[in-house]
Structure formats: structure tokens, C-alpha cells
Length: 299
Image 1 (cartoon, rainbow, N blue to C red):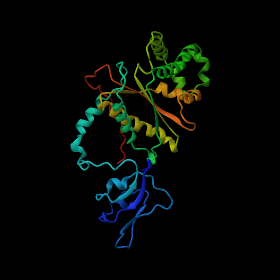
Image 2 (image 1 turned 60 degrees about the horizontal axis):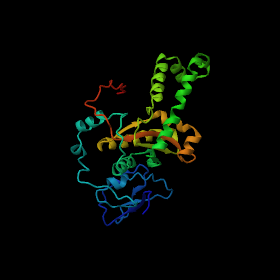
Image 3 (image 1 turned 90 degrees about the vertical axis):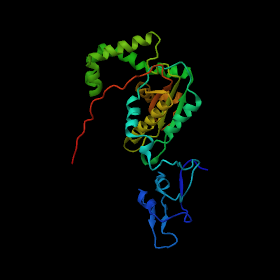
Image 4 (image 1 turned 30 degrees about the vertical axis):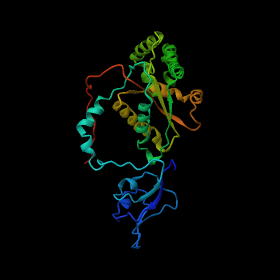
């Protein structure tokens, strides 16, 4: 079997001629014919199928022929998903998800790690590119190395802070705003003080770190896809009693070629997310409030 989905056509012994495949295919590769034996046909002469699998998912007769190492997923509740997880229950899960920064000194069980990765596997991606690669880091020395490298910019920022007003004309608007913000020095002192005490201010002693990378593609969609893939993994981790946190300071350090090389990120690939994974050593009792969504309507 193959790892990339290959649509091969229609099994006419099963097809009930409902036309669902025609309606669901955004690439318009299914069409109606005058042939009484083959009312609908699949035709992909230019290879423009995005392998989304909507035709497989929508066909009530399982008549779409395809090749892939992964079988189609069926269960009795496919037509009644709200009965499995109601909106109210889903909102409880979503609101109680927290970014975990306190972890137990325990490795992530392999079975749970595999389940998190499986959830990330089934996240939707633009044009169904499925372009993701994930490096799983459980080696303590490697995690400590990445943590140490990630904090070097903080130390540099602290040294340069007294010269910030001289540098203002050369900074971007975002950096200029941060440089003159009095909170910046307070935050740097707090983080660097914790670092001097031996605290892991980057990964919080998490036993596992996941690094996501992919080739960049149109309109920065890779970054958008990363958010969806990571969210799938975070919610799966929560369901398994694990905690996660998206680590922006570690993600930024992969802009350096030597860091990408050290962690074997292939040439032409960019890192779009770095997250921790581990068993929380803290238990949250409730979800904090959030401000209302700012909505603009154009009725």
C-alpha cells in the first residue's frame, strides 16, 4: 500500500448513482455521462486531485476505489456527531485547556505519545498538502541545549537595553515599542533571575518537546496549518491527561542555520511550531474569563 492517497475511480457494482461524489469534489473530477452502466465517472488526466478524500467520505455505498495504507474510517455515529460530543461539552474541553508550565519528572508513555501524533496526523491542511514533519525530542541533554540556545537572545537584549534609545531609529515599529516599554526591563530581570537560579524558563522541565516543520507554501499557509495541527495535538494531549505549551522563544531560535542543522531540519524547511508535552504537576480548578470576540457584521 502507499502513503499518498490515490483515487482510482468508481466501483460500479456498489454505486447507487446518488451523485454525491460529483457534488463533493471541488476539483470537478467526477462528472455525469450518457452511459447507462457508468452514469458517473472519475477522470483526473492532469493530476489535479488534491487527495482530500471528500468523495470517499461522502459516498453512502463505499463505492470509491482508492489506494492508501490507511483504511477509510467508519463508525456508527458519523451522522450524529453532536450526539457524541455536544457543543456544551466541547466548550468545557476548549475552555479548560491551559498552557502547562509545571511538569512532573516523568517520561511521556509511548502509547500516549503515539496517540497525540495520530491526532496531529488527521488535522486538515491547505490543499491537503500533509506536508508536516515532526521531531520528537526526549533526550534531556538535547532539550537543555535548545533551552540554553533560546535564552541567549534574552541575555543579549539585557546587555543592549541601556543603548536602546540610540538604536530606536534602526528598529522595526514593534521592536521600538518593546524597547521603550518599561515592562521590558522588568520581564528581562525576572526571566534572567530565574535562569540564574537554574530554572528552565523555556521548557519548564518538560520531558518531551515536539518540533514541527514543513516547506513554506503559498500565502504563508504553512503557518496557518501549523496552528491547526498543533491545536489537534494539544487537545488530544489534554484528553490523555497530558499538558502542552507552545514555546515561541524556542521556535524563533530556529531562524539560525546552525540550530536547524543541529536538529536535522532539512534544507528548504522552516520550523513553524515548538511545543512541550508532559504530565502536568498542577491541577486547574476553573477556566478564567476572556474578553468578548470583536465581530464586524456585513449583513
